[in-house]
Amino acid sequence: MLGRKSVLVSGASIAGPALSWWLGAAGWDVTVVERFDRLREEGQNVDVRGVGRTVLRRMGLEEAVRAAHTGETGTDFIDGRGRPYASFAAGADDTGGLTAELEILRGRLARILHNHSAGSADYVFGDRISALHDDGHGVDVEFVRSAGRRFDVVVLAEGLRSRSRDLIMPDAPVHELGLYTAHLTLPRTAADDDRWRVFAAGRGRQVSLRPDSTGGGPDNPADAADAENPDSTASVRAFLSLVSDVRGLDRLDTDALVAVLRGTFADAGWETPRILDALDNGSLYFDAVGQVKLPVWSRGRVALLGDAAYCPSPISGMGTTLALAGAYVLAGELNRHDTPRTAFTRYEQLLRPLVERAQKLPPGAPRIAHPRTGPQQALFRAVLRAAATPLAGRLSSRAGALFTPPAEAIALPHYPAPGRPSIAP
Ligand SMILES: Cc1cc2nc3c(=O)[nH]c(=O)nc-3n(C[C@H](O)[C@H](O)[C@H](O)COP(=O)(O)OP(=O)(O)OC[C@H]3O[C@@H](n4cnc5c(N)ncnc54)[C@H](O)[C@@H]3O)c2cc1C
Image (cartoon, rainbow, N blue to C red; front, side, top):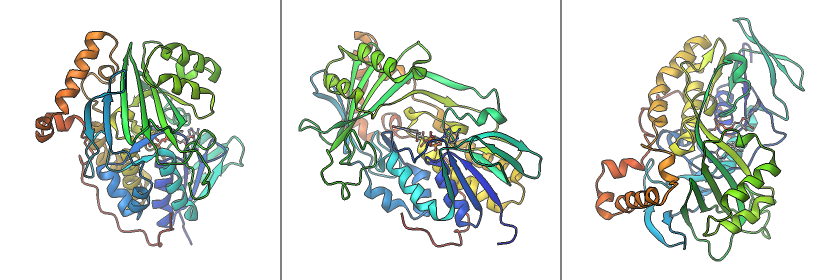
């Protein structure tokens, strides 16, 4: 095709592949570079809500994602003996609930989006950008491994701690929230059920277990296709999270990190020993939780997308929804305008109201859900018990709003449907 526009998308998780599908389907020449040597399938449940779900619907993927639902039926806050003291049903609509109605493992969603876009985008794994030279008419990109190339537009969808972002915005800060989370995959036992069980263990610690619907197991943590692997062990997902004033735990090497987690959670109680036993099984994914709040999301012909631009943190339950909505709006505006500058400005104008709402975390988060002392724990339980009463459930205002992220805060623009037929997931 004459005059085909080219785009380099850096990062193959959620935002990158979603953008790649929209642009590839509209006829762009799309290259995706991912620094890992494979599609990353780690991670736990992510929620797709409101406008995020609308985007999946418009991509023809809602049913594929629904079919990969984790099967979680709701959330129980439990005491040290595993007895629930406050229970919440899964959301019954597009938007609400601690457990969203469309809840999927991050790795499965990444796989679905990758497969959907792979026919109209070139994926390059195991490489990354080393330099960007924007001369106003295009961007010359240098890579660590591949030969340099020129693109009309570059989009960085590299997540919270994007390194290439430093090439265009060297001082972009990550607002650390003082919360660390370790994610693990464990063999499922008879004691496990289909609830998200959350235990506030005191001293700023929280332990939780969630169903995952895979037959995964330690060697195949995230995206085990049971049909291909009928002997695989059924698994559940575990979280250890910790509020701490110590910075830099996420930069420890694995051995040091495992030692810190063992020491910190040794006496936490409930199912924690079983989770600590799994620290060596190779499924550990550890992250420091933060937000990205930037005054602009682009420089010249290079734009930021998803968590790299506006990470709201997993506490918001909105990261994946923003990534999908951002990809849709950015692609729509790039297709609508000849100059990237105009497209990037419109993308920002349209999406920023949703981002700002998503980044407003519940009062006291994340500390309130990680009580340190006995009185703080008692307060936390009292608040949850009150929120779980049928009366609170009927009040659409405060209690309901507490667990209902603002996923409908904007009306998505309607862009013309892409010309090409969609590729089956
Ligand atoms: C492995 C992993 C596990 C996660 N687990 C959870 C979870 O359990 N719960 C939750 O709520 N959220 C989780 N997230 C974050 C969640 O996916 C995002 O908040 C949200 O979906 C937005 O996605 P994103 O595509 O913008 O960014 P991300 O999902 O963070 O993806 C960024 C992608 O860019 C790649 N990348 C990074 N740097 C470079 C580089 N220099 N060059 C090329 N590629 C690069 C990364 O490897 C990754 O594939 C996880 C992310 C990852 C990468």
